[in-house]
Image (cartoon, rainbow, N blue to C red; front, top):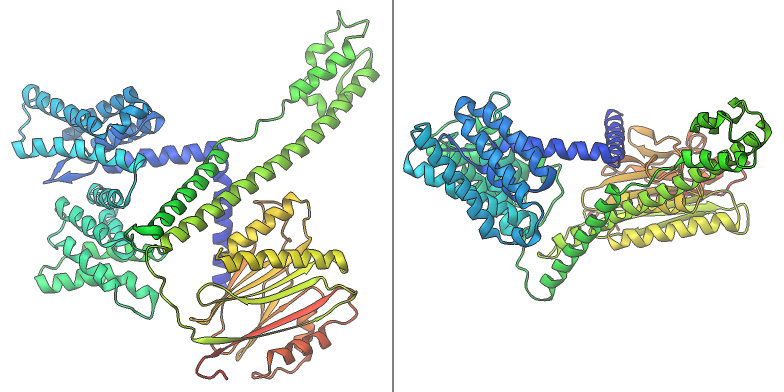
Length: 635
């Protein structure tokens, strides 16, 4: 119960955050805060215990308001992290911001990566000479040239990342970020550099993990050789552990192993590495970057480009909101129709007080020709109501289109990530037994039940209940079931499938036309995920008794973003029986009246449910029962 409540609150939080991100003002504020925080953290970078112009190089590669916000964050960071000595860094950030503003968004100039790098290096070189001559700064020659190289290299790297991103650029960028945040320790025994290294060490590629360890070693924050730690962590991940979570303990385990071998004990890296590995469990699995050669490499690149186009279209639609309704224009139009032919029009002062508030209460106006003006205002009021309805309708279309672009982008990117390596063939540890029974009230059955295998070791059972009975309900249930079947068989995740169905019902104005029960069963682990949207409660019968799953929720089709499906995670490894029923079955009464035999065939259980749970209902009734058996016991 606690797990279900936590998951419910988490999904509500995601939905609320998604609604916030659709607001242009909130989205702009979030991006601004992110750029400012990024510049603030990058200013903490140091090598040989001296601050470095990494933030300045990144600023030079930016443009527009992003460069301005990052400049302000970097200036604040240099002052806070380095005190009076960081004034030179403040000047670096200001000079980098001025350079970014002068360059602007000139595409041809930004394509000259070497030129941008030379300009950033020249700024650091000139400012370094100025400080040495005027302020008598004591700086050795190696550190002076190191700063010049870092400024130019960072500007070139970030320009490549923004406009010509590839795998090598991602590895180098990750290493630079780890180096930059390694000096930030918000709490004792917890550094952001170790946190980032733990994430890269548990989920990244071998070059990315090695460069992250090199960044920690260059920061000189621990005596433990972190490059060796993260390289060994990657090798530990290659061991085929049965439990997935074990591989995310690799960074911390590798750190303990290296400390034991080298005899250098330091507990500072462990909290960050442990938490970073734990956060890596929340990230989606991404295969290693493969060699893009031949038809497979070409297909992968095309899929990635297509995913990028979909993401770009989604971003454009999010940024381009709908124009508002000009209510004052409606009032002005009503005034022209009512006052043009009025004999008192030239001397009337009431016209000056005609505002949009009158659309809510047209009778609030006092006029010599009240009937004519009120009639026109009521006509404008009706026009405003129609315009608002059309505005809401268009907003639903826009949000549905944004949602579909997001689904397609994620799906195409997932396909591209899976192409470089051969997918590991999962072995089914369980076999599934499924049976469904149905009773119809008319010639056509409004309930549609399907059971089919998905990609990998996934198996799906879908129960779609069309609203009402007869041919119309049967058509709705069959159409929804076929759509869900095709998308799941193609590899779409269930969340995207149900979101697509909800968008279609919303745009067609068929709220509540169908309810959905969708069970995704993993035959390799014995776990199941139950998605319910407007459907009747389900039941799980196990050795410890019967448990009710789900409650009544609004059906799909009400709105694109206001309602979502309910998600419950189950375990069927111990012979539990999952029962899905439509609205025509009183599952609670049927289960209370029937005697349950643990090894009874699913078909027999479904038949008994219909016998005892249908009653005098006028709706179609369907019961689907599924159970898992270990493959060693299956016949």
